Amino acid sequence: MPPPSSPPAQPVIIIRRKGRKQAAGHHGGAWKVAYADFVTAMMAFFLMLWLLNTSTREQLRGIADYFAPASVTSTKSGAGGTFGGLSVDADDARISSGSRPNNNEVRPAPPKQDIAGEDEQKGSGRAKDSEEAPSKANQKEGKDVQEEGKQGETAEEQRFRQTVEAIEQTIQKSPELRDLANNLLIDRTPEGLRIQIVDRDRYSMFALGSAEPHPQSRQLLRLIGQIIGRLPNHVSVSGHTDSLPFSSASGRNNWDLSTERANSSRRELEAAGVAPERLAKIVGMADREPLKPQDSKDPSNRRISIVLLRQRGSAPQSPQRPPVESQNPASH
Image (cartoon, rainbow, N blue to C red; front, side, top):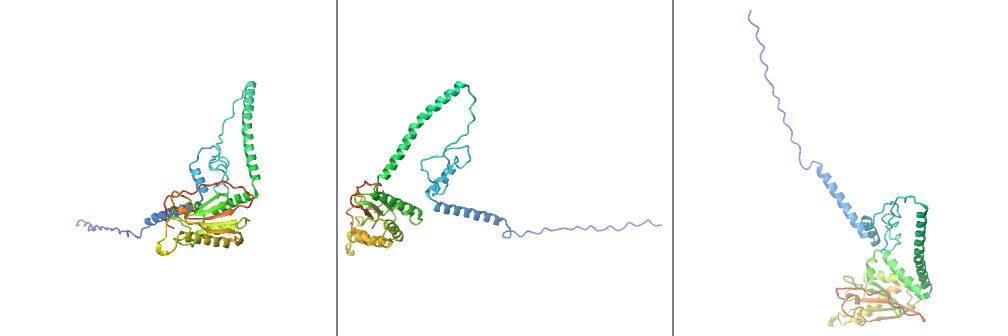
């Protein structure tokens, strides 16, 4: 018999799989995460700028003290912490800027002593109390002197003081007028309580060479008029300019300009509630009474002066505030 034949060899099958290329680039999502982080950071940045712009100086000072405390305390209560029991809100802050929070340090209890040591400690405590007693008495005496001074004020002086406080508080509470606080000068003169609105660098009450007040100036004049309109004193209004002359072709001079500005201020005061019969005089002083005689072209020489005239029998008072210092002169 012939030998059995071997089965035919099977062919080898090789399968090659080719990988597909991923669609690259803009269909991926990694860039979205980075963009979202960027937008979040920009939103936080602009939110910080907005908060800084709307915060008062007291609030900013409180935040700065929080991140840079003057002393480290071991307590965590509001009375002994960084703010010393104060709120960041300006209405709640009633402490002088020079004060600092108390450092309430926790100390271990002293060891027990014998009877002689206790007597010595009590004796030192009595000496300390005797030293503190005069200081407390002096503080009380100082408060009594202040109270007597307030009681010794005349009714007119009390009205003047309350008027100054009302003007300052109202301006600080008004976001539109807060920037004009530096333009306001309030002092006492032999005539009475003088309220001056002065020009400063890069800001003028009136348009160039005009008696038309800017919107903020008109708002400030009417605010003053509302406050002084409740007082019985007569009112004097005077306008002042610097020494920069007009062109000869205009036919006008600083006398005309100062008089027109004083009369324009008078109209704003009357619109705010000052009775016309209380207006004693409206005058234009041109550049004859500069606020800074050493520099007759200084912007602060351009001003409106409103004086609450003293009633008969009132004693004159010395000025309380120095004039504003200004550097760069400007035009009318």
